[in-house]
Amino acid sequence: MELQNKKVLVIGAGISGFAAAKISKKLGADVTLSDAKVESDLKYNFDELRELGINLSFGKQTENLLDGVDLVIVSPAVPLRIPILQAALNKKISVISEVELAFNLAKSPICAVTGTNGKTTTVTLLGLLLESQFDNVGVGGNIGVALSEVALEVGAGGIIAAEISSYQMEATNNFKPHISAILNVTPDHLKRHGTMEVYQAMKEKIFAQETADDFLVLNYDDKKVRGMKDRAGCKVFYFSRKKNLDEGAFIRDGKLIIKRNGKTYELCTIDELGIKGGHNVENALAASMTAFLAGVTAENICKVLKSFQGVEHRIEFVREIDGVKYYNDSKATNTDSAIKALETFDGHINLIAGGDDKLTDLTEFLQLVNQRVDNLILVGDAAKRFKTDAIKNGFDAAKIFDAGYSMEKAIDIAKNISSPPQIVLLSPACASFDMYDNFEERGKDFKRIVMEMI
Image (cartoon, rainbow, N blue to C red):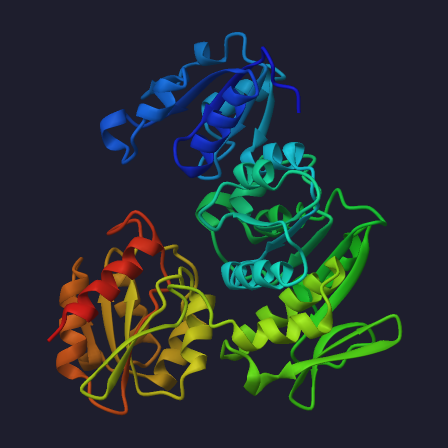
């Protein structure tokens, strides 16, 4: 990508914005990083950018920011509908996402994974699977490391595993992974995208540019995802936890199987998987099929599947106190993800839920809460709606506790009411932004408090 002597405007501070600004500067561009917040409200140190000669603009974003600009790079947290980006589009200035910048810079093939739930676990596992076969592997995207930085670091002769969100796809036009995978599509991020149709369309952009030389891995068990094959211009393979497939990855007699070109490859049994739960079987199938298409042997896949223990903040065991086990599932930022956590246990759950409410329907989630949860401890902005809907769905009001905006209070309530065989599970079914900067910060706070308990 040629940026020498170009004028680049980066919209949105943060991991992606910082990376885009630094890389553009390194490639010879005149760079301005702009954020709508004032600098004092941003929890970042901008000294490095200033030392690199990057221009910084904070606060109100007026159209004069676009004077002479050749390219706008937008961070995923920033929606295309904001005025400065609409003005750029009206002026016919190219507007791209940081992941499209990464694709333009990449000299190695990208294996990209998206979906409502399971992305981080699947991509982390995929990275390990690729490392078992290739010497030069990068992992980045919506996983805490900017994909553009990874693309530059890997260079040529390697391979990249990328976690891709719907936010990141909004401002892409030419993003083209060699292998893409879509895990599932359930209601989420409707505040940003407006409708499920738009949300799904953002997911489908991940394979929109793929051709006959590329691959798409789809979840056969999700009807919305299964039907995406009709809109794909590449080779499509399914994975399924419920159906034996003629080709693809599936379960047979308790074993993970891959079939391709008439050959059958046995991997390992479900019991041998290092990650537990039906949703993790699906994640393992998706990662295995993607890795296999990338060239990883069945033998290497099997070894990694047995050793991989999962990721932080996803049904993560923290500690046992007086016979009660505490689990951190802070990454459950929507009801579908929380449902998967509840399904992992046999019941007797004291659940800590709530946070920044996404206003999605709670019916299916609360029906499962009725079946598996002994006590419901609520926090954050969503507490009132969650309590009202829980009672409407038949949950005993006497077993609902309000901890306000305090994780310490929530855990203290849980400790006082829990006894074996109950477990304490933080699985919020909400975003974290009413109390924390992100779900990682929420999960770390939960773990800190639990570990400090006497």
